[in-house]
Image (cartoon, rainbow, N blue to C red; front, top):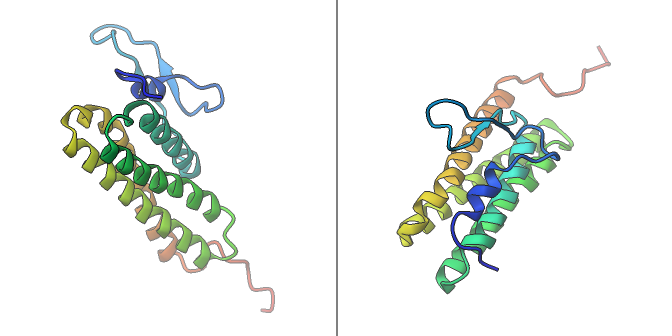
Length: 166
């Protein structure tokens, strides 16, 4: 079901008791008419989950009339969902190499998500402002994943069980 006019943006900005990382500060002073999103989670798994949910809500609310946009939306939902799923799996990695591999897949899927968002914005100019917060979130997740992978690769002993044979 399509809901016209900014439903996805309202969903992104809505305070959620289930996700305390997303809280709204009451706006005061200049620019008080719009809410300010504060304190995004630093936990990649939380961010990946929220990103997937927000993309699903965006696609459900905004992309339904045009069959081509619907197809692009399916691609976007697949990629965004894979970001969250691979981040969840990386937390249960059987080894450091498995952790890095899952994070790498999540990074590739985040880049793909950003790509589909940019395509949607370019194909339908009216969607550009609606895709902007999702593109920003994808870019932030990409930066966080890049840093996480670099850190994991640069610390050879970190994350591995100690050798008790010594």
